[in-house]
Length: 582
Image (cartoon, rainbow, N blue to C red; front, side, top):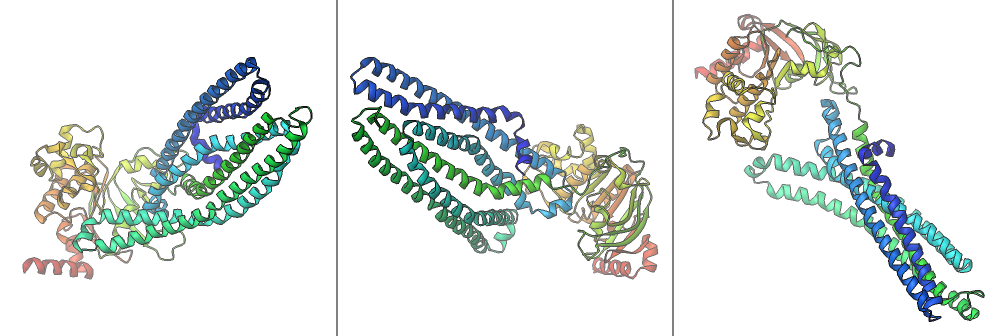
């Protein structure tokens, strides 16, 4: 897991290496300072030797400056490595998500993916920066200070050995207790983001039903759960600090008592025992050793908190996309727009018992206009989503241009299939920028031509900035019908061999709907057109009409044929005809 995420360091590898090296230099300077101070006190101030005082004072300044420089360099390199690691990790995760199939995305909620790309990566960034600094500083300080202390007095250094087991036992007892709490916290963050996303996305519905209070209570409840879990975890981890302080002051008392006895016994003679300068150095080393242990405990806390984000980011990076291009000999050209369903069945997951599509067999010739009708839940949308391989068939074979869709390069197949979905999506930007999603190299003339076919040109020219009119996020500043027509124009710019309109004219009036269909017949006769609709008028002039019921093809024929043979079509037609007559 760690090895996989470590690949995200990449070009920041040298910064990640130099930061701990500089930290080692800083620690070495800090450990040398107490030794110089002892020499200054014992052989300079005590002996009133100004030469030693000056020499040791200069040496102290040099050590302090070098320590500062090493510290600044370490922090700079760590900052660069940490932010670079986070940038690469976000890039890799987002890039990998772009290759997910719908079934992969269904496995992770949208809110969860957003949390992993933001909060989880930020937590890992802080942990990584701490690891390349504090995780190096702590053991190095512990080792070097311990060696220096033992060099002064092995007897006094044994005091530390009594404190270490206490600290180790405390950490071993506290850390596992908070693992489960932090796991739960980050799952709750997903729920929190989901609530926020739903609320902002559906704010018009919330306000129209005056449900602000209910949404606020929902948010407050989840936010309160996060607060309670964090408080519980922090209360447990807070026990670490008094235990640490107990060890620090206990060691200082022991060293003060034992050290004072050794100083008195030696008569301030270094050869016989311990000097006053060496005792003061021991106090410094006590602080350094125990502060390094405190840092070590902080590293443990950060590792505890980052365990859940680490696992969640790893899940995204190692998720295998269900739909991929063939490894070898992928076809990069679609011959025509013919479509063949041969005994196709489909389940949304391998473990699902229910089949959304059941043994569908259907031949659609290239260039044909096909209407698809059926009640809600009859799997009309599911049927057409298989054509550009948004999902793969569970059983049977689906062919486009006479070739199994699984043999095509995915980009090639989807470039030749334009789909206007039920939920029309426009992105923030100008109308031109949205239209050029269909063809980035489209000229202004091609944009106008596509918009004329989609009956969008006239209302675009009514905007003050015309084709440079700014579209708000989600297309909230245009009507539903305008949004649908812009999405149709965007699809037409792809110049596809197959055009799928999934109930994408439901928000336009029947006259505009008829004009769009007439433009399709005249301008793109070679494109296979699949039109899912609720109105019979939208498909009655199609070359063939497919009636779907319970995931199966109930009937196929022209308008006149189905009026004679299909009960479902008759019911729909006469109910709509009656409404028009009235």
